[in-house]
Image (cartoon, rainbow, N blue to C red; front, side, top):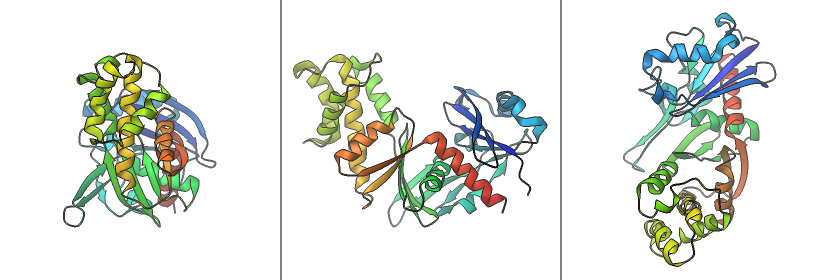
Length: 304
């Protein structure tokens, strides 16, 4: 399989579309495009037309290959790609890429699943994060083995050798939105407000308190009424409670003392604060850099 001088990486999730034109020789990102048309905004027959419009002249008449990762490969996406059982390697991902119908020279990268109903009882799935995990490893080296990918559904994952061997999802971001916009404790936080670091740290502290996370969430209301938590601080407090509870729960899954945070600039510093509070060292990689490095590593396997 010959390699073109350029290729395109698309990270297409439920809510967002991100595309990158990449130089094949250097891995340098030459251009990027972003849109808020996630997969939930499109019908299946619209995917090739929308993608072709977004990529435009990058495609050079179809000569430039496209690699797509994320929820675009889900049952409700462009075409359902397999979710591979653990352990998953770059080689197994490369072997199970499928073509994207309606757009030539385009490939959808598989996801991963962990179905262990007997030993651990764990059942979990991911799409898109697996390529970011391998990309972060490619950027940081073999010492990187424990990863956190913050988001609507945060992923905590472990690599052993060259294989993804376990991962766990925490729906922290979605729960934060639900509590903030659909509960009584979140009522003062309906309007946007900047992060208040003191309120966030207080939330981290209260997530460890007596009564656990369910009581700590309700404290957003009682502290607003009687302990000086201002309306524009409630959202930061709730964020601290939920991220603190997530980090504490996931810390028990690994004896590692360092974690790689793979994410965007908004969430990663909050997780860094929570992790450092619990004595866990942090290295950070941007989600874009991890995606590009992961696809580059996958392409190297495919073109061997």
